[in-house]
Length: 327
Ligand code: UDP
Image (cartoon, rainbow, N blue to C red; front, side):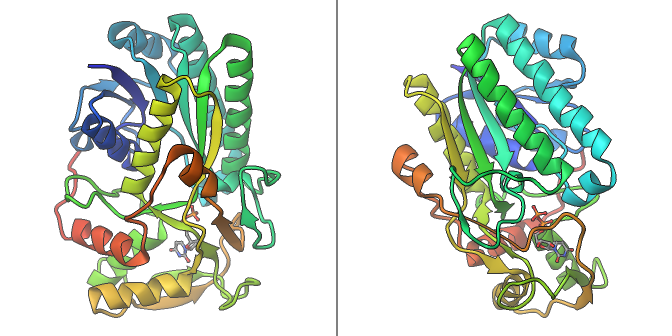
């Protein structure tokens, strides 16, 4: 069985990618420091407990498992936190990726799939974002991810590491089979916080700003189902294994929803009200981030069939009824 080293494989998106890889006949080896991930989410292959800031632990994992490719998910990924503590984002995200790429060169791993983000675009007046839209990040999370994109391209050029870069829009939902789902401590993302408010685990959802230049004043995002996102990674890996060359792909749906629209969709799915309070804008948030993902669809054959708001909220709602991971 061909192995793939999945950094961040115990995290939300990484674990879903491991499940998709296993479904496609690969053995995912999760490499994770468990700082935000859960050992209980690692169900489709071994867990290597290691840290990207510790080069020796990466070398050891690559030496032991000899993967055909690395998928790099492990990173700090919260806009608010990045805005308050940029140094940590630059150190961990950029330093970790540099260690990983250098370890790949040393171990002769020639295929690399990078998880990047729409946060690399910054605020672009609501235009439909494509892979060619100039990237102008407005927070340290987006800045650190853009630096990593450039690093991957430089290492690709210098050492022949074939690579695919995915720029995710807003990832949501949970495994439709209910085996894994989103569990962050602390939780900061809209949909799980909203569902927590619905069941009374939190008093209310705070809407971050109602004075944005969007149709209803709340931020607009392009939500994509985590299972669809995971499938794109398998397609990206196959592209590299087939020798079809490097690529950059946006992963969204081409359709944006405002925070108010997400709340309305939740009401329809759960049949329950969302207690809401209106708050200030969150520092670092762009007004609207919506992707044209036609390149992923045409070049990779990606078909995001689960990415309706109804299914994303429905699967997250089903996951929220479960006990979750205990670590
Ligand atoms: N949001 C909100 N209240 C919250 C969390 C998020 O209004 O408690 C908004 C946030 O401003 C953004 C959208 O919901 O416009 C999605 O935020 P999230 O943190 O889920 O993802 P991000 O866009 O930061 O990747």
